[in-house]
Image (cartoon, rainbow, N blue to C red; front, side, top):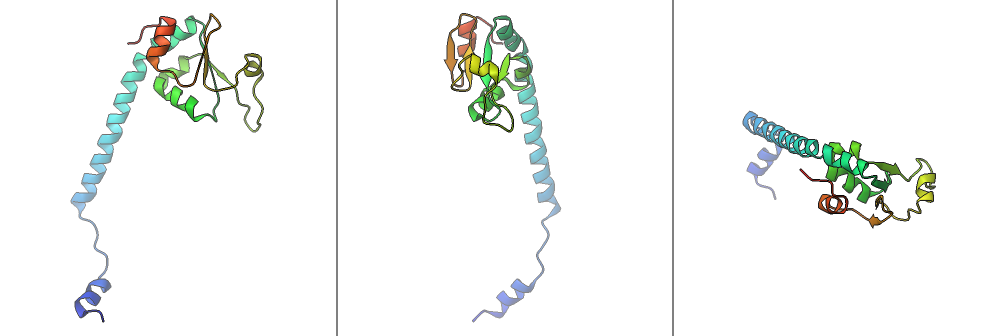
Length: 138
């Protein structure tokens, strides 16, 4: 048997959240967005020169838009990835590889190939790429 007070509470309309908690939640979300935007933009802007240097050193990253490791590698450069010499290995809507990746004998992505013909497989730290190429990190 349910007590009469419980029935009365269950039948009450749901109370709206206080305006204070709604404003606090919105403010918290805006702060987090602002922090993530400013943190990402400063870092990637500093990597433009580093990414361009990789191109000058004739370094190529072979990857695939389907590859989560390639996505992780792209994110490590932020918006500066646009300057990284990149070769796409996947053909959209197909399971085939692009000709440049077949010719370079790419079997795993990401693969980094350097001017001397050496390779590094998998996600590489920016420090590793810097040490290998001589390109300076900011």
